Each structure stands twice: as structure tokens, then as C-alpha cells.
Image 1 (cartoon, rainbow, N blue to C red):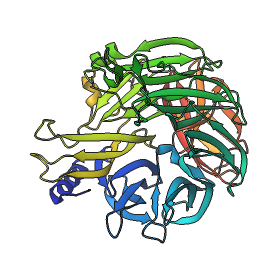
Image 2: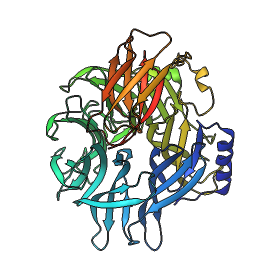
Image 3: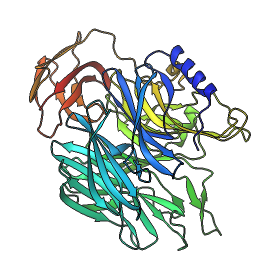
Image 4: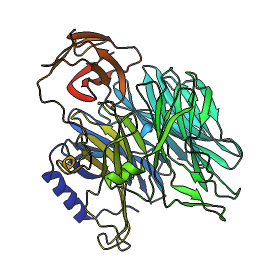
Length: 522
């Protein structure tokens, strides 16, 4: 049960006052927060809360903050019956949608309490539900992603009587199914849990799962978990499937994160948190757990594989287990990995650029005070920093006289620093400072309904210059090389791009040297 102490709110509020706009830590309403969206002057978090009376139910919780982390408003979405449970499952349940937002939800209603996969449409300010659409019965919604003006990709779990399989669907904006494909890990002791979907280089999709397996055919399905990558074509038909961390002999992988790389391949990361010890039928905590990286070719073969343990030791952020929840591409074309209380920025070749361990309440972990920060969703923000949604839990102890479970939002700067200038103490050279030379970047027409012309100028034009365009979630929607001497370029904005705000970045040697915002209207 969530209990918020007044002293906690006072302490967190003092943090907001002391910190500059680009860094803050604030609690949100609800017991868990999954994702954050940014507007011109605010951030809005989306998570879940629950009621105990008259019955236990879950519902969607929204909290809006200003750019300094001060809570401005909060509201929730509950279906009219108090006995109906409504929940979201992960950060890819939330997507931009025609100047609105879309949230994939799972509902469970009396008297039969059948799980149903549905989704909600919100207005542009994410302050009001404008439509609710049912999709599948007897299914759990995990992923809802807008991929075009009239195309939404959905991933669900569905129970077929003996097993739980994964279903990938393409629907239009009215909820009509265009195509549907089912994926199974075989037998009645394995459940498929969708994790993430990414567009593949060839127009298909990369679909990641956790296979919750039972190693000794007992009743416990999640005796150990195995991560997989499934490559599909543009119609969701499976082309190949791999288990980069192995299939659980002797190690077990759970969460797997993946992003396409500029060389036409895919970078994935997983952890060997559990292993099957000799003489025991169950998987136990691996005392030598670490993070693993692999570069995957378009045909599913590994190009290389390596452990991050040596680099993790350099950064002094070792952990008992590595629980990784999200991996995003940054505006400088590197990647951020978020999970538990740690953030890693890595290059496309899998080297750590910087790594952070967060404890914004400055608590001391002990048997007398057990606490956890769990980061779930991360977005890059318009000021170049990052905003993270998650959950904080503290057991009854020396600092918290009662059990606490609540969502949080954490804003850090471009170096992942919650404390100012933390990068100055990095053990190795981190991200280089962006050049201080004045650069010019102009976009017209702005707003636009189709194409844009971008004019650019740097005092010292480099030999290699690249343009990238990002949506508000940080996803790269267009990239191209630029001539160092042309000074302008015309970019055609495809029909697949939804209306909304976008950011153009001039990139030199992996560093952003110019940024400008434009608005696409349809």
C-alpha cells in the first residue's frame, strides 16, 4: 500500500528549489510511473494507481510538472465501474498520435473479469481522454506504437487455453486489424511476454520478448526467463529468431534491449542475472552477473559479443543484478540504457561513454532500511538532458516509519548528472563539450505541411557533417549526410510522419553543434 509521508514531500520540494531547471527529482501520484512526455513548458507522466475500497482496482494516473519539477496538476482515468481494472504494462504503451497521444491499456471487468486489450486516445495536452477503443478479448496489451498517419503497431499476450503466446498486430487508427501474427515459445510451460518493437532497416520489425520458462515442469512458469529477438517482414511474418544470451543452460537472461545502428546492424544488451547451480533444479542469483552486448547482423548472426564488466568496474557501479528496462537513441547517435537505479550511455560499438548511479534522497541501504529506485522509461528532452520515469519503494525502517511505494520523475542534464558538473569526476573521458563557436541553423517554412529547407552555417565547416531529425520522444525519423560547402538542403517529409513537433540536429563527430525546432501540420 502506498503511504506518502509529509516529510518526504518537504524534502523533495527543497530539492526542486535548490536545483536548476535542468535537474530535479519529484514524486508523482500513483504507485508506479512508466513514461513521460514533454510539452513546451511542462512534463506529463503516465503511470498507475490503485484503490482498496470498495474493491481493489487499478487505474491510469497522470501528473503534470513544470520544467523545474513542481507539480502543477494531476488527474486519473477510471472506467465508470469501480470494479474495473485498467492498467498499462511498459513505456512503449504510450505514443504520439496525430497531434494527440495514444495509450495501450488492459481492462478487466466484472462479472467475468476477462482481460481485454484496448487503447485510449488523448488530446494534445495529454489532459483528457477523447476516445476508447477495444481491440482483442482475452488479451493483455503491452505495446502501442504509432508508425504512420493511419498505422499503429500493437503487441499483446493472449491465452489460447494452455499457453500464453505473443501477438503482433497492425491496425489503422480506427482499430481495424490490417494483419495479425502469433508467436509461441512452445509447450505449455512457456509464456511469451512482449518487451519492445523497433522498425528494422529493411522495412520489417525487430520484436523482443521474454520467454518465461519452467525448467522442471512444475507449476511455476517463471522459474527462469530467456530473452529472444524475432525479426519479421513488413507484414509481421517471422523471418528468424535468436536467443543472444543463450536458452538458459546454465545462465538465464530476462530483459533484452535493442536498437538499430547506422551500419545496418543491431546492438542488443542483456544480463546473466541467474544461473542453474550444479545439483539444483532451479535457477539462482548469479554472483558474477554482468551486462553483455552483441552486434547482430541483418540475418540474425552475431558479428561480435562482449561483456561490459571491465568497463563497469572502471565506473564503480557494479550491481548484484542488472534490470534493464529501456534503451533509446540519443541526438548525438549514441544510446542510453536505463534500469533499476543506473543509467549507461554507450556508443554504437558498445563502449561506455558515461555511467551513473542515482540516489537522489541520499539514503543509506541497510537491513534496517531497505529501499529501491526502479527506472522504467527515459526520454531525451528539448534542452539536451534526459527525463526518467520510475518507482520508489522503501520498506519500514529507520528513515521511513511506514512502507512507501510511489512513482517518481527524475530530470538529469546531458551528462546524466543529477548533481551539477558530476562529469568532472568521471574516471575516463566522457562526452566532449559541444563547440562554443556560434553556429546558425534555420528552417523554413515553419510550420510546414510537407517539405522543409534547412540552412546551416558553421564558422569552420568540417569535412563530415550530418543532419538528423528527431520526434519528441527522441526517436530518429530522418538522417542524412550534408555537404560542408552547400549551406542548405531540402528535406522531403514523408507521409508516414505524423503531425507534431520535431527537432533538427547538426552533428559533427558525434556532437550536436546546432539544433532547431519545427512543426509539421497535416
